[in-house]
Length: 487
Image (cartoon, rainbow, N blue to C red; front, side, top):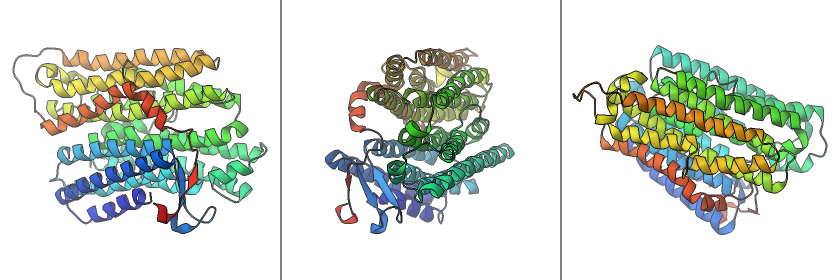
């Protein structure tokens, strides 16, 4: 299990010494290894259930503990799939002649290591370290564009990330001062009463993580960063990076929220999520640039995730489980669909040599493949069957009705309609005829195949939702301990 952390760090160090083309070959080999290790971990969890692992044999609270269960290994596999797709696409998409592009590979591997650290982390400080590694790598990837706008977006992202980290770290310090440990499991065992300092700690950590996740109205940094970055980078940021901070927030809420939270707090966070769905979708519909449409769509789709908070607070356990399963499917579906959408958008921009939506006129006749991938990904964002987005929204709808919180049903339905509006706006522009001459650049088939595969996975997720959910144990439940010799 430790190899999922240290192998990407080793590959990052190695690729830092190489030019873009050599780094690409080395990285593609590393992707194969990471996928195989991720599959091996999945097999181990299927065989023996969840387990924990102490690096070097030092147990908590002194050592660094890793923990894995069905949820964690699912996210490890999701990261392997999306990161591999983005890495393959980047190898063909990025310009190897530009000297700064060689830094894509080390930053890519640092990002992957940080993501695995979040999925497998068992204490609050190591989660913080992993989150910071993700943030710094992501900021560097945004700045790789080299233009002044990219540097401004990266700097804005950096300031938001630092502010979010500061709030999170202050909350961690309060918890450490009270319990003398940062292990989530030990804090959960010792937490007996609701104290004002602990409530402040939870609020600080949730606020910092909400900023890093770009929850409305703290989303201002996301559209510039995702819109200006190179398309493989945008796919990584939207598909995976924003999920890491949400994952930590969800863990905090599910483990501590029942004792430190309140109905007012849960409903307020849900209301912000609902506002994100509406406001993000409206802004996506109005954007003149293609990637900005997709970027503001991310703001909207992130809003659904925060319905977890009201739908799991003070409800029956079966209802809470429905909500957790729905949110997990939404995370997986959105990661696949949004990565596909950004990669397809990058192909279209490459083809039309413009970022504007109105420049898509005629592209449907000459370049249908990438446009079709974009549309398939949009089906999942709308929540139409048989997509993963439909399965996720169906579970959330059931949880809303079963918990008596019927108002969230309106958010789910309205969000689907608004998603259809901005997706069909892209299609409307592409079907306008401008003549019979083919003046478009035709990307290689390898560039067009990758987003298609991701979009098909997002579409087919709804058909295999039951087996996927069977892999997911109750979130964050560790059933056994192993030592280094057993791994």
